[in-house]
Image (cartoon, rainbow, N blue to C red; front, side):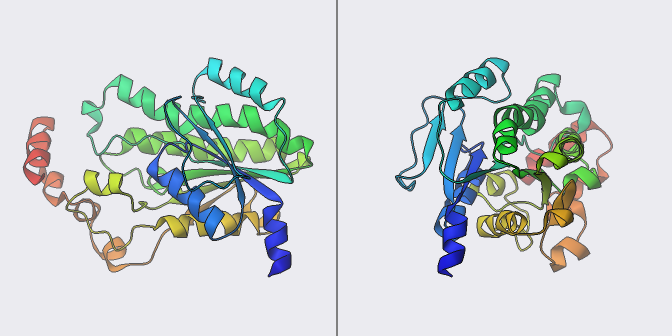
Length: 274
């Protein structure tokens, strides 16, 4: 066990999107349960360093990786940055705007989903892939969604962004595997956070993933043979009665919405269910 601790402590996991409840919680478990060092990247200069971070961990805030100017600034900042051991990258950015019919999604909302779930990952890749390559290779991990393959109703823009992310990861593997990059997309079921519970107050939670389970999946990828994971999407979900027996509408707590005949009726049913 001492040898394992030493090996893991030689890896610093860069976690983007660290401002979110999910990313911060996953990072905390990776540190406390698996002894990884951390470098957290957060959007917004007003975000303060979390109190639970250890002195050996790094906190970098004020960079929105969906924006070109911030990507260039972070690249410059990292040019003088020294980290012990090897880096691994966990792209945990990703906005979710709730369950909305296609015709009610504005173009601005759709753009925000693309920026946070895909473009910010590209920004992170531009900042950290060169460092992973320079160290002889490393893990490039993204947090996707099972919704990408399922194309669930009321999640189409979100699912589209996550499907694009899935193919982006394949492209990273195809382009950089010879440089030692192992690119893996984790397609997650719903992660159990306060934000998700507020969006689905009537939904069943028995099949939702705990933050500890997501962190365990990240740890498993880092410690698995690259030939198994490189370029692949790994589905991460629980077997449960609700997941396999209930309909999608029942699982999100809006079974009546399936019978709506118009966007107006859908909106009324959604409002009534709250």
